[in-house]
Length: 405
Image (cartoon, rainbow, N blue to C red; front, side, top):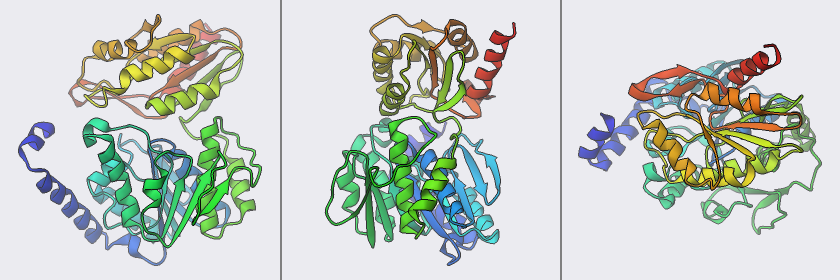
């Protein structure tokens, strides 16, 4: 219904509607982010945002600050935290302003917010006084909703355009120059490839050895980005290191569910770039058994055969299953992924049964990697229905059944 209405309303009217809501939300809660008591940090990018939000929060807390945060995983104000069950990474304008007002009233000195391209396009970042903007990376995603990669990139760029204070950019990313082009009082870059860049302060992974508990080369990059934020706020490198080394896991992000007799990992990866990075990070001694699907609801159909192609290159056994089909034909989604695989794959629409099949197939030293949903608490199916879900919980239940038949 919403999509049908949008077709008959000019875009500029829809844009003004979202802008007005952003203003009213800020007005209702007395523009909380403009309080001198709190600094706001915006984390954007295609992948890694939730991890950087958590890492940054831990670094600032290690330095003694009271922090609030919003990510696709959870909400947090000081010691209190609760899961994000909205199926929306960046909340609506009224929710986000209310959250910031609560955080200011509770004495939070920093707010670390995950900022999405869709949120920016709908002006959810408006009337939030961001002090710092960081971008993790930029690869094709939400191409259909933004009507092209350039528009997607410009949406991310609008956050940097709005932030006049500190800009932090992953200079290993191929689109780094675009984001470095926006004016700012101070700019930082971070690199794991040893790149150099004139005119900005560059933080490289060779400067200090961090013993991270998190898997994946990409998490080194995430740690460097978070460290840049810490250093920009006067936090010592020692405190950054201490905070990052304390992090045992990020919920649903390369989260190890079991290590023995085989390994089971749950990750949120749902873009080609993220999936490739995950698979290249977990290849172990035994076989790799991959459970994957693709977002439905008519979104980003272009990436389905690409996800299949990547799975075909890395996985020894592939089990295709439902992810969030919404109102789209479930079997058709799996067929589109299958086109890119190039070898035999098992199709099991019931996601629990697919996870069960993977666990039953695993032998000692094998690795099962379940991607696409991470710690998401819902599966979205037809007619707007949301089924309670958690890949981690389902995997643990099926492992328990397999171990104790």
